[in-house]
Amino acid sequence: MVLIQTVEELRDALFRIKSVGKSIGLVPTMGALHEGHLSLMRQARKENQVTVCSIFVNPTQFNNQEDLEKYPRTLDKDLELVEPYIDFVFAPTAEEVYREPATEKYDFGALEQVMEGPARPGHFNGVGIIVGRLFKWIEPDKAYFGEKDYQQLIIIKNLVKQLNMDIQIVGCPIVREASGLALSSRNQRLSEEERQKAANIYRILKESTLLATPNTEEIKHFVEMEINKIDILRLEYYEISDAETLQPIRNLNEAKMAIGCIAVYAGDVRLIDNIRYK
Ligand code: AMP
Image 1 (cartoon, protein in one colour):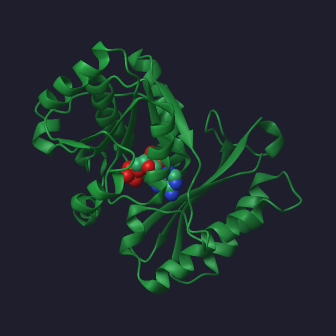
Image 2 (cartoon, rainbow, N blue to C red):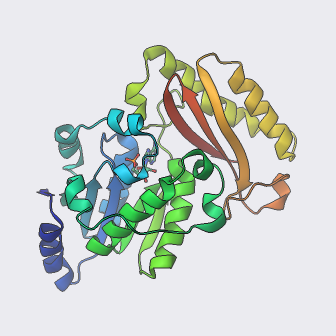
Image 3 (cartoon, rainbow, N blue to C red):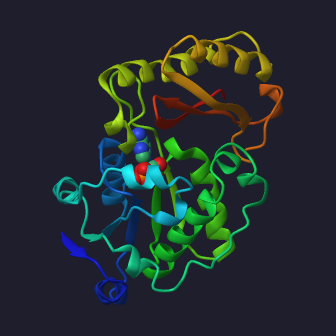
């Protein structure tokens, strides 16, 4: 495994690999790695001759300065964890990534007008900027993203179309703790009590899939009521949408695939999760 910190070194290293026609799989991350990230890397390892992971806490996608400052950074441990799966780790500084100022403006249309879009103004443009730059620098054949950040996965598929690049976006299932809590780097900031209570999020989502109604208002009402019963948890949004267009639906029968996406605060830690209804 080789650690690379500049774009020039990255281009040099990958130039040789591309010139002999080897396939490249990319896993973009912000570090503080856990089994969720590693599941993406295992899949990338299986499907590509060369694997690259990026570790970069991208300031342009944070709309909250405190969240950026508190984001866990554990590079040494991360490098040990990725060793079995990854050939090149790209871990640049912010100065390196933003040598060219971040002037790109992406328009993801209706995909960014819902859920995380209004809740985190500027977030998806920041995601577009960093992922777009990684794609241009690395030109992977495939790139791996978790369904945990479902809206992001759909937006990245749209980004590839906008950039007109030939990159296959692979969505990977959510990895959870035994309690059901979706793994997240932000879980490190939960107290023991918050962590236990946060496990209710997935329990409630699962229960909501068993309700005998296709009416999404009723399902949403159930989720809101149940989350409100748990002190410490504070619901930011729960939306049930068409899983392809991300637009809200009133009835599960309106869409071929339907997904419920949630954002909840546990104390001051913001958590997201989702569940498929069909
Ligand atoms: P992050 O470091 O949080 O930006 O995440 C990097 C990638 O890992 C993203 O594509 C996430 O969706 C994915 N990821 C994060 N947590 C999980 C999880 N629990 N299960 C599956 N993928 C995940």
